[in-house]
Length: 449
Image (cartoon, rainbow, N blue to C red; front, top):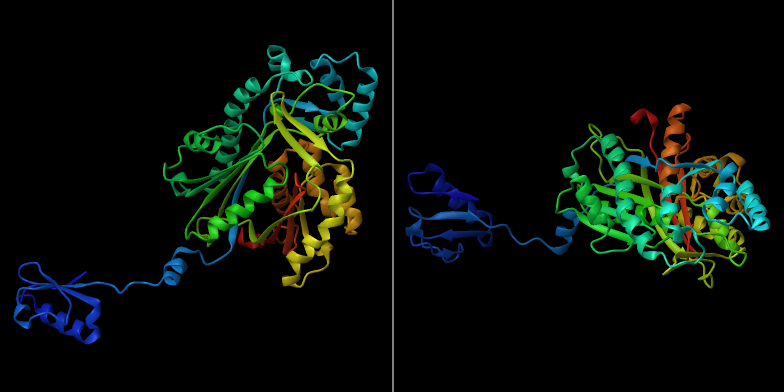
């Protein structure tokens, strides 16, 4: 910044003298021949031909970091969801599944599978795999037949496309130019490649090449909490950041025919569905153009020791194989209160019925066990049970679907906040590890929306 010019400029000498009085080390003089001097070196005879330039003193690291960070907590600003067109009803699924996998001769196993479907509390699911695709690629429907190549071809194309549908809905609700998206966090359980699904989605949406991307593969069902924790850190540590979060899940990688020796695989065939969900997350929202939905107050992750094999997936030539211990509901329910206590002690909250609940719907047995262990009122897991019923277990995307359901239901029923009229809530993700993600949520007053 130039304060002075030649002697003919009346502000010049005043500017130099004022600079001398302020602080000699803060200014640089350029002499008649372009020499640079500080105030202790300058010759006053040059004042009629010199320029004076303010050089700010160097900021400290703390000052730089504070300027880079946002002031307020990360906030959910928009939500969008999407599913494939192909809808399968659970009441018919056993017949469908054994027919398309050429397994109708396994009558006793089919009866067992039908009972699993009946107990799942699922009404319908959306699944990308159609009967036509299975006819064209029969190895996908066989049990343990080599099929990874074709599964990979389908997944790497379709996962970003389904993610795009949800992202466009979130961007539309947000209402701001997509050029304002500074970060992208993409999560999917399958389809590893380089460049990844995050790169493909950025191009499908036309995001800026400078968008900072994070790609999460093969995390499993807890990852809906992981993406929120990651987005929270990004939003709060980068002033004016707007993070697009996308979870896109397609079960092509896990679908296969039945086997008497793999009943845990049958449970997966009865539970999992396809879907994608997207959110815009940022701190310090501009309430004149943005509509806050939930604040992300804290986010933690832990794993239960000695449970590595309780929920497991192994990528093989036959696709992703799924393994499940029968005592998973007990393991989760017996460890969840510790997570709650650590998260809510700082807030002085110990009544779990005073919270609104966003729990990953791993299956009805897990929900029942958690509900019983914590003595939760029956309606506390209504939003979770509704998403399980209408979509099945969509892995990482589920908790985002449930958040969307809760804010919409709260508005429809005239609640005072986006969290069923309550101020504080908790989001749980459960999955391989056994890993538990815990996110403390604060709802937004409906009057501000």
